[in-house]
Amino acid sequence: MRLSVHAMLDYTIAGDADVLLQIEAAPGLGDQNVVEGRMTVSTGAELHPFPAEEGLGRRTWTQGSGPFRADYRATVTVERAVPVIAGLPAMPYHKLPQLVVTYLWPSRYCQSDRFESFVHKHFGQHQGGDKIAAMLEWMGGKLDYVSGCSDANTTAVDTFTTREGICRDYAHLMIAFARAAGIPARMVSAYAWQLDPQDFHAVVEVWLDDAWHLVDPSALAPIDGLARIVVGRDATDIAFMTIFGAATLNRQTVEVSRID
Image (cartoon, rainbow, N blue to C red; front, side, top):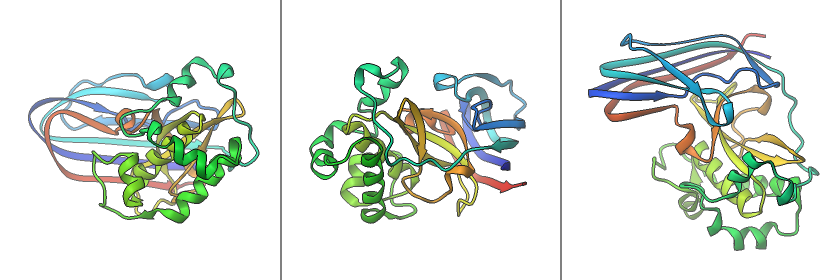
């Protein structure tokens, strides 16, 4: 399918600040490509792009002071079959590619070492993709999607305790579960067709059968309608905008529609 994407970030920055943006859909991934895309900032400051994590997508440095607006428009093609996770084998540790090993370890928001006993007790009877499928089923039955219930400090442990969250929280807990089971998992920011309300979306990729496979723990958007932006260990790495200074959010919009 072909998607039209528009993201707009409107902030007021106090003083001068460096800004790191991660809002461009990643091109050339095999299952998606950017037909055309352009990002602009209202300040007229120079844009300094560089490859993001593992070369998937890119990050862009710029600067701002006072009113700051970033606009991104793109047409993205997505050709992705809905993945069948069940039955896929997990890979032995010694066969994991070097870059994948990083996604076995605990990270700031995904304290996988805190879940090892729980994961073994509740999902230990399953293997590989069947284990991931069981985790997704557990999350669908045990967690409630509640807008505004979490903030930038909420971790996987917090979400597990409260049993509620938004897409970012679902993704953190899914990643923590998978890593606790010895399955590499990473966080993915994406534009999502049919997401309601529309916003930047957080999903997960798990390493099974020697490849990354997309899953959406919150089940809010179809996998075949996701346009990936960047990947990382957790929300720290995939934030759509990081301001190195103080700023106030005025307005933020994301629009994703299907063209054909």
